[in-house]
Amino acid sequence: EAGVAQSPRYKIIEKRQSVAFWCNPISGHATLYWYQQILGQGPKLLIQFQNNGVVDDSQLPKDRFSAERLKGVDSTLKIQPAKLEDSAVYLCASSLGRVERGARENIQYFGAGTRLSVL
Amino acid sequence: AQKVTQAQTEISVVEKEDVTLDCVYETRDTTYYLFWYKQPPSGELVFLIRRNSFDEQNEISGRYSWNFQKSTSSFNFTITASQVVDSAVYFCALSEANSGGSNYKLTFGKGTLLTVNP
Image (tube, rainbow over all chains, first blue to last red; front, side, top):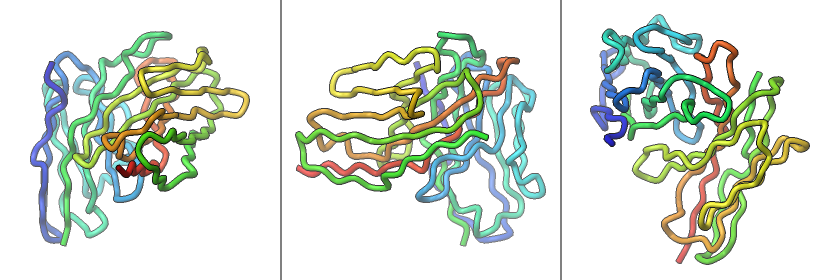
């Protein structure tokens, strides 16, 4: 079974430029997450999709970050314009999508991430 | 609010030593899930284990074992006879079960960098 695919792996841009990241979740996974991981810290959730609907975007800086999952499969995360503090690894994860006692459907599987450097 | 504390920032051991990674969590919910993930230098977070709050049985998987104690809100991870390949950052994470079944984001600790030296 293929895992979560992300591209690109690395991206270097200058501040005020735009950048986009792509994620393809595990086949059949209804829930998709984008996390931001700053060096030396644990990942922090930016946005969660259930199929093509947003479940939680409370920590997404909406003045510069946007994300979409139009057909309920692939997702794109965009930053426009980028700031120096956006330098981080952006991780995509997916899960089957339902939480039931004893079920394994809330286990999140992660991609390798995109390492963004803003200069 | 949920919180996960991994007090050990870095641990260094010599191969074949046993090592325990500590994790303490805070939550107001009675139903929640605890996870451990491994992040090797390649960057991908690898799922290791999930426990739910109703199951306090300890678990062993090969050289890995986990000790879940609700009384102390801890979910510690022990690697027996460590190997160089175990070198990575290990994250403990907490997820509360939303009654609607749709929102169960992970709250991560800051991670523990484990270095196993030959």
